[in-house]
Length: 54
Image (cartoon, rainbow, N blue to C red; front, side):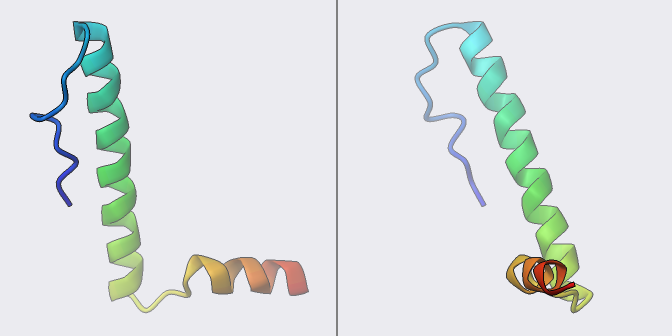
C-alpha cells in the first residue's frame, strides 16, 4: 500500500519525520497482517471473540 509520503506537504522536517515514522508503523502492521493471513491464523475479530468467550 502506498501512503503517499512524496505527496505530503510537510510544514517542517519534524513533521516529515513524524509522518515517515507513522508510515513505517503502518507498513509493518500491513506486513504482519499479511503474514498472519498466509499462515491461516484467525482474524483479529475471531481472536478477540475467543478471548472474550474464555
